[in-house]
Image (cartoon, rainbow, N blue to C red; front, side, top):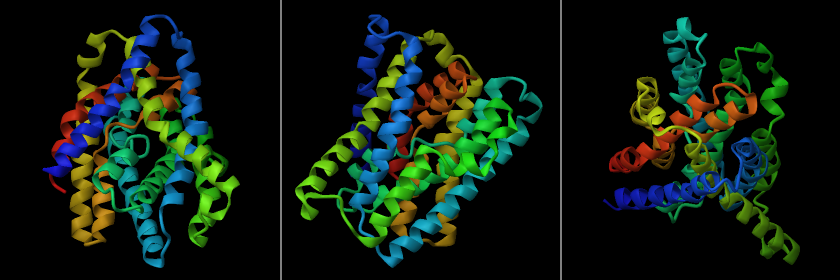
Length: 314
């Protein structure tokens, strides 16, 4: 029951961060056109800082390195499988952007913005859990800046090595790995200046969850409430993402008998709500913003029930 209670409280606090964003838009203190700018700050500033923060916390070992590679391979294969499956199911309806967004939303999980604080709350004595989340996020972004972008826009130009490797997520992980592998910590133990840099990284990294939810609240204030709850396709995407996908992942990991820490981390991250990057990609690419926002919002709101219940399986 501890996992259930911890997860419920953590998700509830995350949802509370959306309230100021909602109020700011309703009070016209921020214009809806500015939401995409906040999304860019989240993806280009806070997320790279979260990557540095996560790897800086973990302690590298040969076993952990192997487990991270196994984790990356399994989660990438699972995401490709689900994207391929639902891309095939919806292929005749891809002229409608909502089906293209739904295809991506069935798979992408909020594994870092919400996943990291939830993992740290459930496993407070394990500094390595955040590193697993970064492997998930790396996999998701390699697909996001290429395959996912190509699906949303129906433009094959996004399928390129340049898009895959030159993006904020990949670059920040590439910068973090040398420190992680060598065991060098950006901390006050290695000098006062590095201690100040560590504080900056920690603050920016921990801003991801609040900023992510602020953006959610802003977007919620721009839509009609009925549009959030009347589209069956959104419920379908959320159910697949937050129930079917994590249970399939858990079943596969138990079948493969992989490391228990790896199994629990992947299961929790797969159970996280529909990734806010679905909305962020739509905002940046300029297609399907409303349906993406509605799906992400519905997933995030419903996670107050689905995530704590699935956490009971831990």
